[in-house]
Image (cartoon, helix red, strand yellow):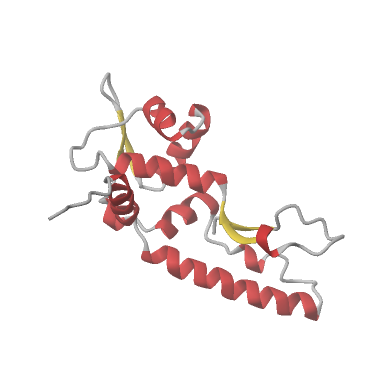
Length: 167
């Protein structure tokens, strides 16, 4: 699903510190892809393509890696490429129609990592796996509710200066 378990350097020898525990977070691949899509969202209405180098510079993503991500997103139907001197990448769908979960599934696969190793496990592992299944199911539900348009709206709201009006 694009989410993984990160234990903040926990080696198994000591108890993890709660402040360092990050049970669910996005992979770097997913984060970069969402940043690239968010950059393209800003150009959707004008249908102005962005070149890889522009996106990479804007978002701080290595160009070669971005090329691979955009190729995957193109195969997934999220972006399209435009050739020529003024070519580049554009969103293939309206930002409000692209759910974050769909992007993650395209990049990472739709199989939940919570079910990995479900065979040949102890009862204790099965119990813990059930909890993780619930965590991942909840995460999937939340990610399905949010779209690129939501991220774009939040970005625009945060970019607005906090204006104070005095009467």
